[in-house]
Image (cartoon, rainbow, N blue to C red):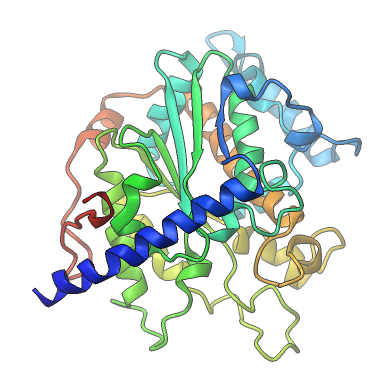
Length: 362
């Protein structure tokens, strides 16, 4: 009863936060909901294909991919526009940043449908100010989800693709548990979730059973149980203080983040996970390679990605889709995939995780 009372008190505040965020979106420009028919003005530069020559390693990768055949057809020809993207990150860093892939059955189903165009596909994202577009020089153009949205529309010409940005700046994962239906459609097919920065660090430094990880598990269960049984993908960003030089007072190390604790939830529920931290750390912190240093990737505040960081996040999402498409062509969606998609969720990993209501809809 006390919990229900607290939830009732929170609802007006949550609704106010949501309305304010929508107002902010409208004040700064069109809400970043993208649909095929509204993206005809795309340019190659918007997909990250600028004037710079393609690195040799990516030329080698494409050459090797072109040697692979499926049913006597070149795989590269079958993929076609799916491969039409210029990455900023080296291939090995994208592999490092794909921190958990798992069976990938739900995403394999969605990518199969994107390739065949047999039904419309909806893609959504929930999170905070990063994926809302903060730090990007031009929100709706250079933020990672907008780059990814344009890529998806062009990569799958047979599909009717709808993409919706449901992020609410300044909110943690606990907000989205209660207000998920305000940000994603119930029949959504793919959902990205980005909350590592806004959830912060557990003040008690708990590895097991922290409040943040329980909230992430609750949100994970809510998304996976939506009617469309969507693929959920964690998009993990760097925590406060990590993208700074070691001599800075509030500098945090690679391990000082909730990302790795959330990784156990990803593995338990078979949720793919992408990591800006892991993709960038070797080049940014160890090698300090020009073009990939934290100063090149992050906004001046040090914790929101700038255009460079947003591009890396888009690279990770596109890489995941490309690798899934390759997987679908070489190992088509099968009975085992269908069983994994349709089976019930496992019992909660943590005690005290109950089915969550949605007070924002009441």
